[in-house]
Image: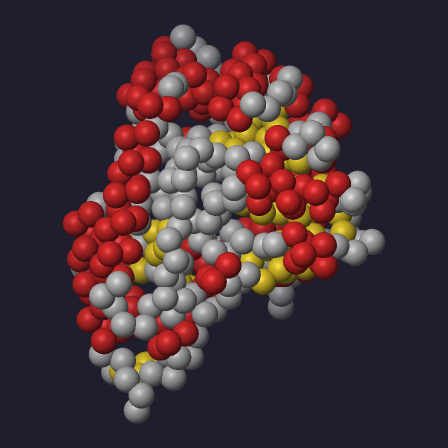
Length: 400
């Protein structure tokens, strides 16, 4: 007897988390698994941020704060947006939450009614569709390909908008593809949205600082759509603070107040200690604290792309941000080895987990099973070893 709600039964488990769990299970059995599945920087949180958290504990900053975060933190976030993005916000437009994922969920639950259409460019981050399911929204997927660097065109966006469209959710830099929209590309999309004043945008910019093409561009920079853009950010990726759970939402006051109300009933404020750590992170300069990590990710990207050139059948573009490679693996469909027949990306990831002991995420999790996602947020040693294993396993596949 299934007594759980239809709501929870409709939601799928995150495949990135599922693959990470499977990796841990195999490791616990003594199998040497190299996990390239989770998007988690392998760097330590900067010491200066940790000291700020320790000081908060020592000074007994351990009581409830404002649901949206204490006001000095929100002021620091406003200063960050002005300094880094030339975006003007006031503290009552900022909501601090327990990770960017909660920020996105807050915004969706505040905007989307049952039956509203929500445009989602594919590939998309795994949780977008599941959050929409919880809100009763109807995803309208815009397909992209590796040949267009996984970025939608203004023509595609215009064609997807209908009278039922409420929202578009997209990310730049993108998880899973690493694609980064230029100012000109965002402006072209903004010009389309100008014509549709009832359509809002959730712009997921959590990978802002892991950008290899000369600086991040925020969607909210265009005055004509500024009030309709909900900017999502946080400290997990750029500051190596995944476990701290600190997310940021910036929006017009009406949406921010609505998100505050939703969050007040679900979780209230995020950890007061995390807030103090976030406050320090907002004040750090890029060159000293973030660029060294960014440069290491760039070096790893180039290492991975160089190694993958030696694998026949993989088709890769050059991602311009985040820390993922998203190759087309359709060349291997129909091939077999050791009892495995590859029909799609999901089959290939399980084959590589079983035979190469490398954990990846199938493209089905992000909207297309012709691809797999590889995270290079690990050491160069692990990357070299993992790609050698992948190459050997893929070279063993053949048509029966």
